[in-house]
Structure formats: C-alpha cells, structure tokens
Length: 423
Image (tube, rainbow, N blue to C red; front, side, top):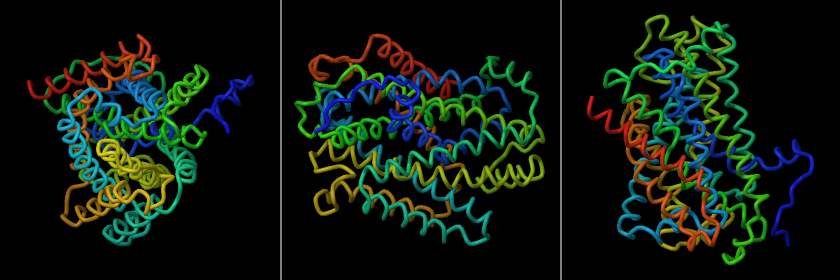
C-alpha cells in the first residue's frame, strides 16, 4: 500500500505530478464572485488596484499552505483541528456563518452563470439556475473524490479565457507594467470597500476548509486512513504541495490581474463604471473588445462556476462534519455520510431558491466578498494558533516564515476592514 511519495528526479515531471488540491483550490478562488469583484474594481477604479494581484499572491499561498499542512499532518479537516484551540460554541458559530455565506455565494454564482448562459443561448436565466444547480448537486453526490478532482483540475484551464481576452484588446504593455507596480493612495469609501472585497474573494474562508479537506481526501487515496500514520508525511510531500499551491495561487492572481486590466481598459476607459450583472459586463465588452473577447469572458464565467460551487458546498460540509464528528468525504457513499451530503444538497438547493427572490447577482457577489473579507482574519487567528502548536501538528508545525506571512496577512485584512469603516 502506498504511503510515501518519493521525489521525481525530473523536475518538470515532478511539478506536473504534484498538481492537485492546490490548483483546484486556487482556480476555485476565481469563481463568478471573484470575476464580478475584479470586474467592478477595473470598471470603477481603472488600473489603480492592479498592484493587489502580485501583493495577494504570496499572502494567499502562505494561508493555503498552512491549511494544507494542517490537513496533511493531522489527518483532520480544519474544523477538527480548530476544535482543539477554540470553544466548540464559537466553532459552531463559524460553521453556520460559513454555510450562510457560502449559500449566498452559490446563489450569486448560479445567477452569474445563468446570466452568462442566457447571453449565449437566449433561454431564461431561471431555467439555467435550476439546470446548473441540479447538475452540480447530482455530480457531487454521485461521483467519487478522484473523479471530481480530475474534472475540476481540467476546468481550471478555462481561467485562461480571461488572459486571452486581455491580449485581444492590445494594451500598451510598457504602460501596464508601470501601473502594475504603482501604489496609488487609497482614497474614498468605494476604494476601501473594493480592497476588502478583493481580499475577501482572494483569501476566502471557504478555501481554507476546502484545502484542508482535500488534503485528507488525498491522504485517504494514498492509503493513510489511520490518523497515526500522518506523522509519516515527508519533506518531499510538503515541498510538492508547496509547488502545487504556488502554481494554483499564481494562476488565481494572474486571472485577477487580467480581469481588472480588461475591464479597466474597456469599461472604465469608456465611462462604463456601473455594472449590474455579469451579462451586462460581458455585453459591454462586445463593442469595445470584439465578439471573441465577449464570448471568452462569458464562457469563462460558466466554467468557473462549475469549478467553484462544489468547493463552496463541500467546504461547509467538511466544517460541519469535523465539528459534529459525522462520517465525511466525497469518497463515501450517500447512505454512509448522509449528514455530510445533506449539507451539500442544502447549500445548493437554498442557492437555487435564493435566485428566485430576484437578487442583484453582481451586488450579491460583491458584498459576499466583502463579508468574507471581514470574517477571514478572525478565522486566520485560529488557523495560526493551530499551525504553530507542536502537539497538534505532531512535531511538524508551520515554518517560521509561513507563520510570519500569515500573521502579516491577518493584520492587513484587519487594517483593510477598519479602513473601510473609518473612511
């Protein structure tokens, strides 16, 4: 039975073989909520926040690596590890807050996907909301972890649609390079809100739980079903996961950069700063960037929705299962993990139902990102305390550098939240 993974002498082969949970998690970060938030940033503020794409990359990578290490070393999901550091009542409150935020996010993601699909076919959005929700819910329950993970990994390629879209409009790259490293003063409530939203959709609570949960699933797939065997995690495996997460978070932040850039050079440059739907954002690109750019933007929204919604629903299920000691895992059959799958189904069904209340998809997507930006730093404190505890981490706590970067990330997110309310 395979319990350890040796280093591949061919670095390139080793890199591609290491890709897995980190890439899926990083790609899921660019869900329709993220795309909407970055589109709003570009449309309203132009290129002034481009610098956030390269600043948030190491911060996001450090947080996701800390969550991955917790899952790999302890053999538990994040909620299970957190239960050793924070009171259960507080952990239960976090679970319900996560479920509520994720359900709203699912509703908004489905609405964004449906708007985009309507633009391609002309069929009513509510038709697509039901179809997309049913397909995603059925797939999560029906298929096993390795089947879902392999599909999600390939769906990550859809994110390159946004990179291609930016090249279609032929920007002045020398000017863009200067703007990308130009820090502008943060003036006005709108700028602070957008910054909190970007942090919230990039360094998002549901990604923390999903990353740790996926690590446990990966370990099960390698035959490590007994918790005591997780002490055998090797440095090779940790380095491989660092490469995986580095690649996934880099992809996520590259997409952020190009979405902000595309909407800044098209919508903002032509005075179109108010976006009310993903359909409107896509349609606005057509006369300014051409039919191909509009098509890529639209298809990308639908594809990343299929990537992100299982992550949103699954992360809440992992949190509840760890907190209440339920049988869990996407490798379990429905009858063996009824409560776990019930949370997933509840999230998707409620998300579909919310879309019939005529919510504004972009507003919901944007404000769900703001809420995540406010909740994440509190959760990061608990993650930080777990990751540095040698007893919980079985003598393999996170590195000092990882701890420092996560501490800086937490402080920056608190500062951004305070700045939003103080301005």
